[in-house]
Image 1 (cartoon, rainbow, N blue to C red):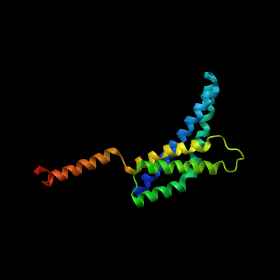
Image 2 (cartoon, rainbow, N blue to C red):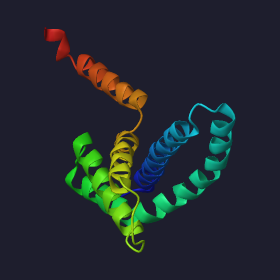
Image 3 (cartoon, rainbow, N blue to C red):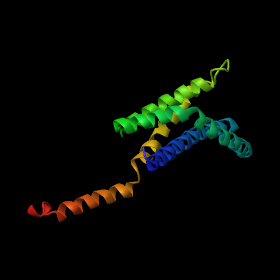
Image 4 (cartoon, one colour):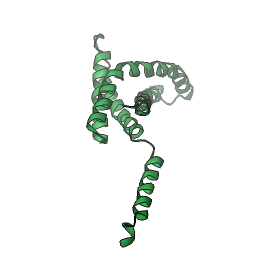
Length: 159
């Protein structure tokens, strides 16, 4: 794997960790909104209080998913897998396994924590795929260049 592919893979992994953190953050903000009972001041205070833990959740997600994500990226590179179902499914499995590992030492895990992290992992699979595939603009330019070469070769002129 060249350094270009490694930088794209690491960027995709970090984007996936960011997406998983965003899913967890949205869940936290929705729970704050429900528990505030319509009190705007209470909701604002809850949001202000919840911002700091999100900055802690991101590195925890990065630490828990680094090795499994590297294995998935290497396997997808070796077998040339580009299916979103593969990346989303493995992201959900990594998220559920990470949550299970994280809550293992706690006697009673919060209800739905594993499901929340599985959904976050599912959301994290998409950025890994899109960054691994490269930018859309670059792909469009490659297709246009291939079409130009086809027409310039004279094969396309026979139609």
